[in-house]
Image 1 (tube, rainbow, N blue to C red):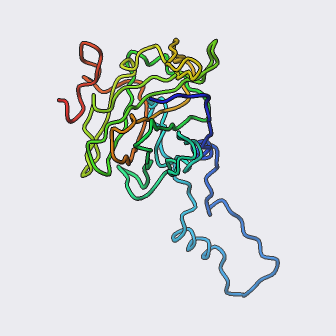
Image 2 (image 1 turned 180 degrees about the horizontal axis):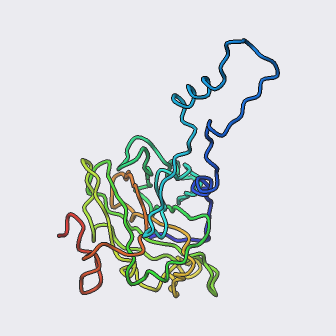
Image 3 (image 1 turned 90 degrees about the vertical axis):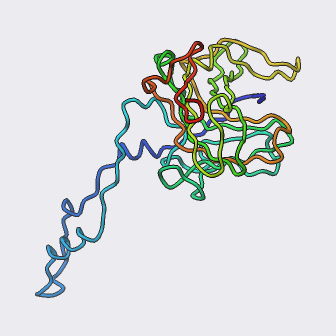
Length: 266
């Protein structure tokens, strides 16, 4: 599993720009000529014609009120908030690609180093308070594999606001909730409470994982990792990685609160 020595957090301002930019419309523009170009020139006609062939309206995507945070979607800026380990391993950093996509145009392509404990993270521009949704919230993502049957860990990372000053990680095994396929996208969905309340980090000083209370009020990153030499190679695509405030009906049923609505585990 992953040993975090610190948190590298970048950020995407795409959604903020979408919320703050005014719509540019030709109907609100005023054209004033310094001198008449032609007595037959009709600026009103030009404006109306341009309005019919050019779309100046910025497309806005209505935010789902049930969405707590989206770590991966089409609004994500490639590479702006992604990192991986081991650094300098010769593998490309996970990045957005149009080679595969679940619904929109892009997905996150992840290639990890199979002969080492390898992983990475997608981080929020600022920590997110998920504590109000611990009993009802779910993590949801879609996955497709280059070979199929890939097994990896998915989890969350807090901002390291604890006495040790080290970011703590929670995770679950993807195979507990879905089987990855190379032919079609599979949904991985599990309750937040399946992650528990105690996170950990790898301490090189004592060569062991150190556990402490996870800070659900300041969650920074979505993480993904693989075990050493479990795969000959590892390449997957992830899309629509989100945390929902309330899971679908039935998704929180089970003795330990595990989701039972995934396609492979009905």
